[in-house]
Image (tube, rainbow, N blue to C red; front, side, top):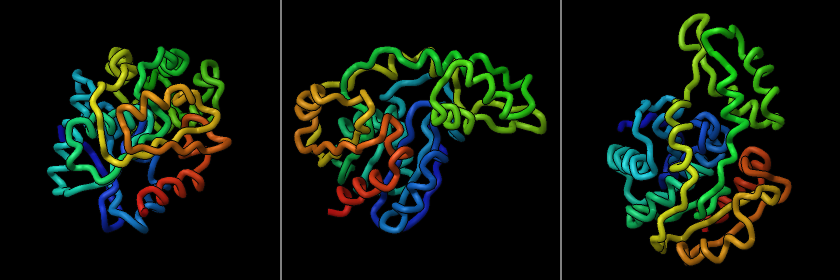
Amino acid sequence: MKLHYREMGEGKPLVILHGLFGFSDNWQTHAKKFADYFRVILVDLRNHGHSPWSDEFSYQLMSEDLHELVQELGLGSFILLGHSMGGKVAMHYAQKYESRLEKLIVVDIGIKQYPMHHEHIIAGMHAIDPTLIKARSEAEVILRKHIDSEGVIQFLLKNLYWKEKGLLAWRMNLPILEREMPEILAAVPEIEVMTPTLFIRGAISNYILDEDWKAIEELFPDSDLVTIENAGHWVHAEAPEEFIDAVLSFCLR
């Protein structure tokens, strides 16, 4: 599948993968900072953003989509960064195409299987009929009935766009993402990766717990863990300066 992407900057390629329900726009502010040092490539994964939709959805397919883009762009070795679901795509890619990677950065996601925890988000999106609402503010009112987090609400609202005059639509393929949630939450295969890897977690996130680190190190022996204070799962959005410093410190050393 030919993925939509945008790029900025010059130099060593830095490819960035968004998380579940996200898309490349979420990373534009960070990309402008990274573009002072790298050729930054922001990718929309399948069924997200401006990339095509498909009834087929798996980490294997998303890894192959990414590899197709890597070949299309003629990238040599590059740095790969992924957040949440994008972090899992990055780990799967590293397990299959390790020789292509110079470094790997995984943001607030581990290797274990996760329990279902998106029910309230999916319920909120299901409560919205984009064909009936005439403004994002109407969607916001509906989302607030299901979701407490202001950050998550604004994050989701960015996925609503004007498909045509007077008609809003979701940028994500919600039915397929909901159907494939067990796949999205599944554990990463037990395949060792020797690529230098940085795991970044938010101190108030529960995605990478202290007790998870031993198992992560077994699959990624050449890895470090950075914990960013006062940040949750969207660590890059909640503590942008600290996050950018952590990434650059790792990439430029």
